Image 1 (cartoon, rainbow, N blue to C red):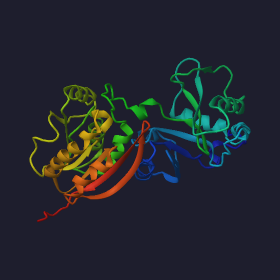
Image 2 (tube, one colour; image 1 turned 180 degrees about the vertical axis):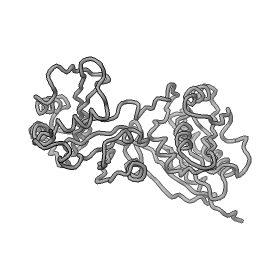
Image 3 (tube, rainbow, N blue to C red; image 1 turned 60 degrees about the horizontal axis):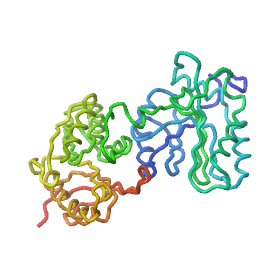
Image 4 (cartoon, one colour; image 1 turned 45 degrees about the vertical axis):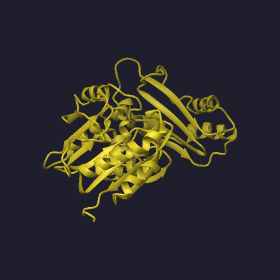
Length: 372
């Protein structure tokens, strides 16, 4: 029975869900939810996509461009930034959600492990408010009084049930987490290199690239191989001629890390090379997807301009006419000139924030004709 006394089959439609994303990638996540999951996107805000589905199934946990997925308990975009918010948090948490139904849906996707059930209550805050995170957490816990069954064990790590309150400026979102850490970190990423790209961001880049059957996908500066792994995941799902995934890096440690990370994912052609002098035939690549080094990674911002110019020359040489490149950089002003000088057209630009670092994700198309 539901909390209102009706059989579950006669209950109201499923509650909404929301996906957390890196700020700036909401549109890409919404497209995946719509096209691949068959969901109906209801609303997007910075770092969050609210949507509905017909059924809560394991397919929710197969989304590649989102960090986490939650059942929506309640939400508001009208916080006052004052201590009055605490009373609202306490009241909304206690009165708005149908907690038994939310828990039942959670349990259907996350079967209980052996032993005593474990739970955690988590509060995240961004922005300046007239109260501390500990104050919000206390109000949240008070609103949850009596919701968690007696005998459950509270734990801070890998809890079976997690109830979240996320406050970003005037927006507050409360939900039950359906995903676990493997959604955002993946199971393949065993090793890392400095400034390694987050898998969900890499998945967004591969999605924007529009990889199709028979294509060759290149990451000439592959780092830990995250983009290659996400491209291999797409390749497995494509019918028709196989997709070829090619990558390389000048750093021997990066090549070792990449080979380790891809061991359980699929087969890619890996090379240690200088990305400004690729040992590839001209017009041999359909897609270039890459996260070139940022200035802070090189240690000298003055190196970025020459590096991007030399790399762009090679991208233009190996990319087929009409091919597409998806690039993630911090110094976007240094990337544009060498691409525009070759008459590449930018088709998409997203301002993204990854781990606190502002950057630009852009998609480009090479002309399908040869100019004079």
